[in-house]
Structure formats: C-alpha cells, structure tokens
Length: 457
Ligand code: NAP
Image 1 (cartoon, protein in one colour):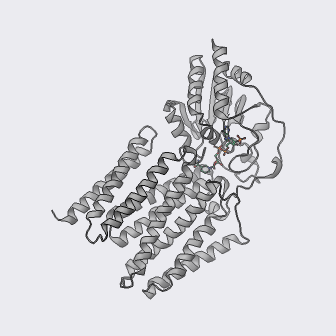
Image 2 (cartoon, protein in one colour; image 1 turned 45 degrees about the horizontal axis):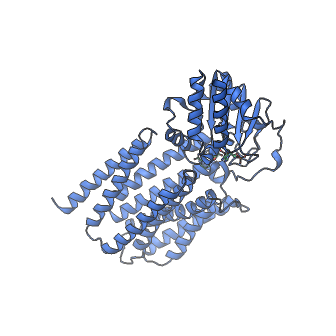
Image 3 (cartoon, rainbow, N blue to C red; image 1 turned 30 degrees about the vertical axis):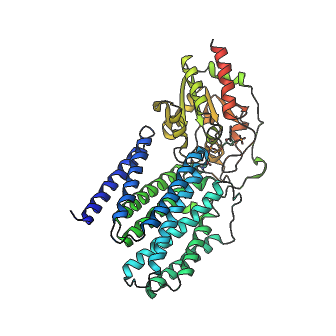
C-alpha cells in the first residue's frame, strides 16, 4: 500500500470519528463519549499529517504541538464552567486565525499562479481573519474586558463598505498573482471582523458565537482544499455545517433572524431604572419558601446563569429528591439560551445526576406553568422576563420566554438587583405572586434543604 493510500484511509477513519463524536455530543447522556471520539479523531489526524509527503520541519511541528497542547490542557483544567463560552470563543478564534495564517503563507508564495487555488486561499483568508478578530472581540465581551458596545454612526454602511473593500482587495491579490496588497487585504479582513462584532451585545451573543464558529469551519475547509488535505476539508465541513445549524437553531430560539442580529443588534446596554415596571419587590425568607414548596403539588424549577455561577446544581438535585420523597411533582424547564452557552443548564443538571426525563425544553413545558403551584427561578432573569412578549422597546422583545409568571406562585433566587445579560429590568420580580429569596444560589438552596428537612420530618 502506498503512503498516499494509507493517509487517505486514515483521514476517512478521522471523518468517521468526527461524525461519531458529533453524534455523541448531541445528547448529554453520550456527550462525554462523543468528546473522546472526536478527540481521538483529532489525534489521528495530527499523527497522520506527520507522515504526509512534503511536511518540512518535524521539529517545529512538535514544538508547536507541545506548546499548543500544554496550553489547552492547562486551560481546560483551570477554566471554570461559567467561563467556558469565553474559552470557546478563544479557541474558535485560534481556528480562524490558523486558517488565515495558512492562507497568508500560501498567498505569499509568489510562485503560485493557479488562480483557483489563490482564490480559495483568499476566501479562506478573508473568512478566517474576520472570524479570528470577531472571536477576540466576543472573548473580550464575555470575559468582561469590553463592557461597552460601540455603535458607530451609520454602522451598517461602514460594515458594508468595509466588506466591499475587503472583497476588492482580495480580488486584487488573486488577479495580480503576487503578494502585493496582502497587508492591506489582511488588515481590512481583520477590521471587518471587529466592526461586525463590536456593536453586538446582550442576548445576541449566542447567535454571534455560533456564527463565528461556522465561519471558522468554512475557512478551515477552504484552506484544506488549498493544501489538498482531506482531514482539514472534513473538519472544516463538519464544523461549518454544525456551526451553521446551531446558528439557525439559536436564531430561531431567540426569534432573532440573522439579518437582525447583524444589522439591528441588541446592544446589551442597561436601561435606566426599569422604566414601565409596576409593583414592589417582596422579600421572603427561606422558611416561607420551603413551606410553599413542601405543600405544593407541582413545582417547576427554572435554572439560569446564576445557578452556574453559584454552582447550585448539586444542591438543587438534593432539594428535588427531598420534595419528591414528600410527594411533590418536580420538573425542570430549560430555555434554549439559559446560561452562557448552548446546553449550559443541561450539562450542569446532568453533572448533578438530575434524571433526563425530568428536564423539559421550552416548547414542551411552557403550557404547564399555568397548572403549577410554584415556579422556582434560580439565577435566571432574561429567560423569564414577561415584558419581552409585549414591550416592543425591550432589547429582547420577541424572544420566546418561559412562562414562569403563569404559575400560581413564583420564588426567585438571586443575590440582589443584578440585571440579566441583556441589561433589562424584569417585571416578573415585581409581580404580586412573586417572592424574592435573596442570596447566592448555593447558600440559599442549602438553607431551603435544611428548612424542608424540618418541615418533612
Ligand atoms: P441572565 O439573564 O444573565 O440572569 C442571571 C441572573 O442570575 C442575574 O440577574 C443575577 O442577578 C443572577 N445571579 C448571578 N450570580 C448568581 C449567584 N451566584 N446566585 C444567584 N443568582 C445569581 O441569565 P439567564 O436568564 O440564564 O439568561 C441568559 C442570558 O445570557 C440571555 O440573555 C442569553 O441571550 C444570554 N447568553 C446566552 C448564551 C447561551 O448560549 N446560552 C450565550 C451568551 C449570552 P444578581 O446579580 O442579582 O444575583
């Protein structure tokens, strides 16, 4: 068997491993296994690449692998679950940046006169550079390094002009067949990623992150074609397709068409003083809340970002077990964008061994709130904000929300008056049937468990 056949067959196995990995990751039950499959595919692809003909300096490749591998291993160990979205944005940026770097090298090789190859390299460079700089901005926003959203006057016109200029400079690079104009082209493409991402904030961030992910996949796929590397093509196509699907699903879940996300973004600016809010905040004690829960027949728990921050998932499971032993029917309602990354709440509840059959998506459970005695909103805010149904001035107007306000009683667990990710005030907290139970999620649920035990015994 020739080396080429061995390499192609190995890349076929890599493709299978990626697909098995993705399939596994589609459910929390098999997600860990999926990650191992996909990781094995990555290792195989890397090893096979060493054997590819024309691979120059193996020592440099090993140094890069050791450096990159150690940094990822270390960051994977130390990064907290709540900081995962930033990490995803960063890794995504690295993917786009690598594709752009490969393209830069290919485009700078003046001996390439194949227009087709140069055009593919330029396309990958454009998308990869924009995905790289856009992901860096997304990282800075999610990490809190960039707190403000900047919107230039005529932002959309600026973006469109910049996009047109970038495409023209890409065409110049391809047509001239030389490295001339490369610096201008890359600067424009990088700037484009910044100007597209910087005005976007608030509840639009999940859609943007998955869009950047899809773009990175596309860029890697194009560079795979340039290098004639099947593993890169497959990985690029798989990431591009998965990212596009996720973008579509997230945009649908948010009821925010992609056009609006890009051209009429939610800025995430905090609106002053909760305009249009009626009622007062009514504080309740843990004992009041425990009594309400103990004597309820049906309880729905709505977890949000604060549950992740407070790492309250294990205590929530303990509380659920207690309530069920006392004969209370307990379910979990998960909003598609609760937390800070797709599936964030599902992962945490799975980690705490909450049975999957107790966990319901928005469409499955929304009709049940009106027959529910108590809705427990733990560290969630935007995903239960009823104003988004009617207040057209709300930055998250139109996003589907969980109908926690339809329950007979609502207990909201949060630390204070902190706003949600979109920066909007929440009418639910001021409603007649809502009691505010202030404190860190884990501490409060521990107190609830203590009080429940006394009430049940
Ligand atoms: P949220 O709107 O961000 O609200 C979280 C609430 O949790 C805050 O109001 C905060 O109030 C409270 N909190 C924070 N730490 C807490 C703790 N230790 N203990 C108790 N409470 C705590 O969360 P959400 O309802 O889950 O909505 C998610 C938002 O993030 C949406 O706007 C979504 O679009 C956006 N987003 C989602 C993703 C995704 O992929 N899922 C990605 C990026 C952005 P206090 O400060 O008063 O405690």
